[in-house]
Image (cartoon, rainbow, N blue to C red; front, side, top):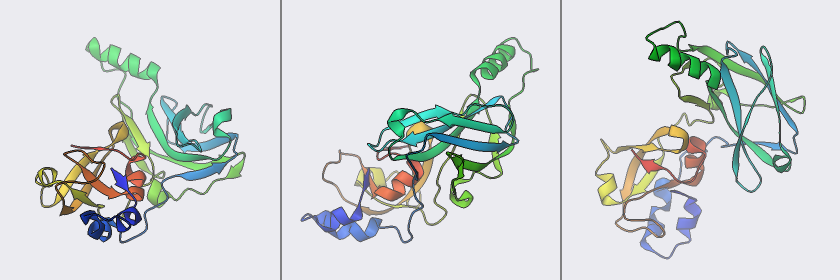
Length: 233
């Protein structure tokens, strides 16, 4: 689970001394990009064929996540934000996947032993992201929206903020910590996301956590997973 290290510093329990252990050495990238009161969102795609759908994952002001597909022809795609997202929403991620029609045709052909409908592979980019017609600055170095490789086989590709610095530091119970290899644990998050963390401290019991747990800096978790809860692989 994710936790603000400052909350540990104000604790009266033994976990207070562990606040520094999970504090990131460098500031995490912004986990989401504010859209304000936007009504439209548009993108330009490069080498992303029409057989690939692009979806925006948005977060409302109340924290609820919602996916909305882009529509359009050629390299220009856009979407309309529903009313519930026009009051302080955030852009959390882009999702790319085969269209349902193409996936159905490809699997049907494979089932018949034919290979005329190949899996889609390539290197693409998303650019010229605009909100209500105005450019929206998205740092490619952390979002990975330029020159990303894709190879679809019924799964999705998610483009969202990534850490490029040290592995996040975590506190874990002794049993979970023993699963680490050279101190490194692999965590499975929402939407099949996977990331690694480094165990820096162990504690048998942690408030509000079950018997098996991993605790890390909340912002670090959100920047990788978009959620506050994940599971150990």
